[in-house]
Amino acid sequence: MAKSLGGQKQSDILEDGWVTSDDDQDDGKEQLVADRKKFCEAAQAIFRDASEDFRSVHHILERFKEFKTKHNDRYRASYCGMSLLEVLQPFVTLQLLWWDPFATGSAADAESAGW
Image 1 (cartoon, rainbow, N blue to C red):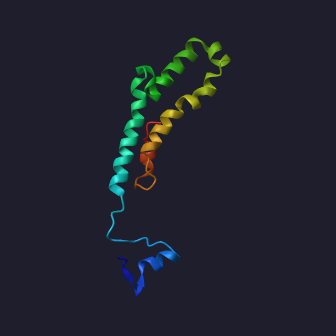
Image 2: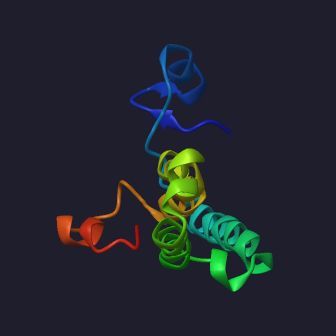
Image 3: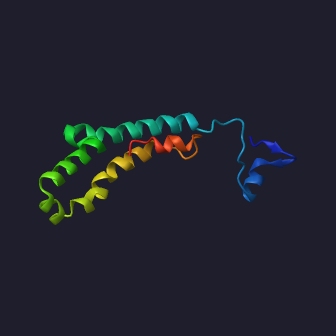
């Protein structure tokens, strides 16, 4: 049975547009949060199979630094510095999965991110 809003049936109103506020229905926020958490945890599982040397940005940068220090000619010839963006991109993407642009926070929160 459609609700009556000011003498009109809800089905008549829906022809003109959407009813956006309905107190009878849950907005699905809890389900969204639960689904998002499961997705982010599954995404983190990708790095569990990686060697310890390649599980974090810090370790990867240390390996690049070590290679540059010991083999500078090879480092430059292989354009390792230019490949850093591609190497670090999965870590940044993973961190952005947890970012919620609608959550309140401060600029300090963004500055303290691990990337």
